[in-house]
Length: 167
Image (cartoon, rainbow, N blue to C red; front, side, top):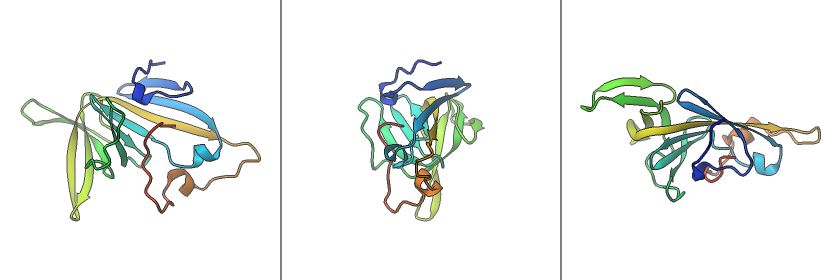
């Protein structure tokens, strides 16, 4: 179990946190409830020294969060962009290695977006932490079964960002 000392990632109920190489896995079982099924949850956090990039299960950045204040940066260029991997460069800027689909700690995360119908790529500062958040929702016999559109948020008309508590 890894001690989670980052208050922006704190959780009201303890969960299992495992580390495998560069990736930490947070596992939590929760009961089925309207609150637990109302919006998709933050599936992945890519953390740098000053910023948390919150991703949904499709690896799309849904929020950029300042680690010092917890404030979201609504107009950040990475909101809506897709994580495509990570890069490690030499001091001279030459490509040394790449990782896909996730960066490794010590690499820069690489995001892809579209502007004027043309793809763009941009890198973050050095990644310090990667957390995959696995959530299992348990149902009783009387619980209404949600659709996958409800679970993933793909059927929603309004844009929802996944900020605040990752659970």
